[in-house]
Length: 430
Image 1 (spheres, rainbow, N blue to C red):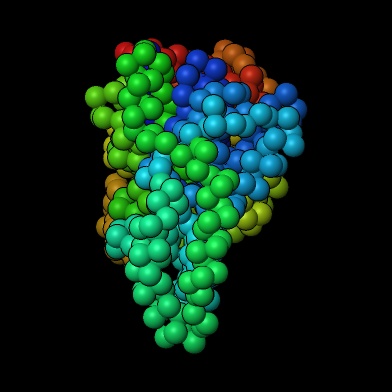
Image 2 (image 1 turned 180 degrees about the vertical axis):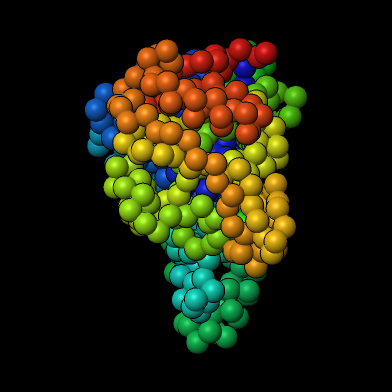
């Protein structure tokens, strides 16, 4: 079977959840490999809308769903999410949901630190969701994190908590905040352990066994390439690596077992939170995209910043991820535009650039060089066959292929799973 990684090739919110849902029909296992409950995937299944943050999208189809070691897990948020999903009719049990015992836990003190840091940063804030993702990853790298499996070994957990609080209480004291009470935290951990430990396993081992048995794995990325901690618009990025290579690191599956990388993009560009955005629109066109596309964050509800498609950024994302094919989402949102622009390069201080620079000021100062294409002024909503697309819509997609150097394998024309044009079978290894 073919094992596929799905990644976002812009700033997130591209519609990865729908593509994962579509491909999960032929996959046996769906794996989350990074991020936390700052990610939001929306699925529409038989008219029912599911909003997922930590749970892999395959859970609503009853697929074996694995939360890998690269994910930071807020067990309280997970419990709430599981209740919301089960209330919609989805059955969740340890038989279908597995959580890596090596995954780092997000604790209440992480959420508090996240919010305190953003407040202290003032105008320099990153624009985090305030859910503790960054502080949890900081503790992981500093080797003081509490991991899921630690909850099963109470004799060593207390020493780990002492080490954790040595740092956090010193930091909180310096900010004039009350210290975390150790006894209260230990009791909190003891209570949540009863919920999460039945799902905890050595995920890498389970995934290895699935591969040996010829099962197909689908790796579900969260956030997107331009939010990657190394390759994104640093420091306005998330705290994990979001590119395809993290699928191996964040799950324990070797690189030899990953066959294909599919990049997901919108037919335009959006961004949530602070940071540079070269093609951002502040006019009626941007307002129209936001309104028609319902561009509001799944997790935060914040209005998304909207702009034209940036071929420079997406071309970089294709290269650093090793993307073989693209899925273009929300083509129908552009149906009523007379003209559609595409960024084909940048200008910075009189120089032309064919890549996005890494310096923070340069990222904010680059100006897009646009190419204008004619709109198609007719509905593509719900179209499922490529030949039925308007000619100018086909020309738009063809031009994107030329600029990006990869084929567009899938085109989405509505939130519904079935309203997807399949031009290249994702499960073909060629």
